[in-house]
Amino acid sequence: MSRKSEILSKARALWEVGMTETAQPLWLSAATYEEHIAPMLDALGRELEGAIHRISAASCYEKAGEPSRAVNLYRAALSGPLRDDTRQEVENMLGACLAALSHKSTKVPV
Image (cartoon, rainbow, N blue to C red; front, side, top):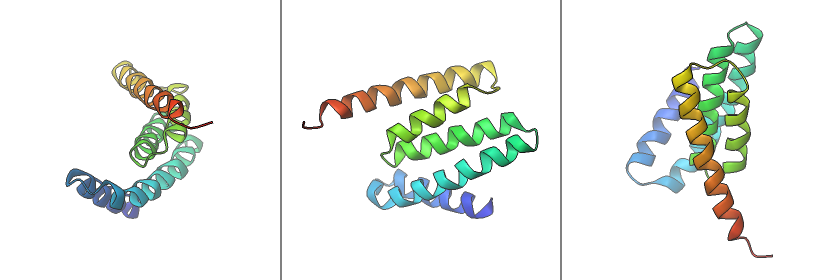
């Protein structure tokens, strides 16, 4: 998990200074780590923590320009146990991601 934290820190730092393209592969890498951690936590009976890692993975995919993957993970997180305030936040993130995905799909030439 320390490697994942290191990658996330680098991605955030690059993102914050406007180097979004440089951060993109780091977001993807962090998302992959988060996505693999979540089911391990589920298997240990730590479903709430697993859901948090799914939310983190979704956020990383969203920042990396992969909204469809983000949507799937937000939905997966919402299907499990979450605190009420967290559930509301994730529903809002999902809504924003779906809106961005819808907007993106209207720009695709046929």
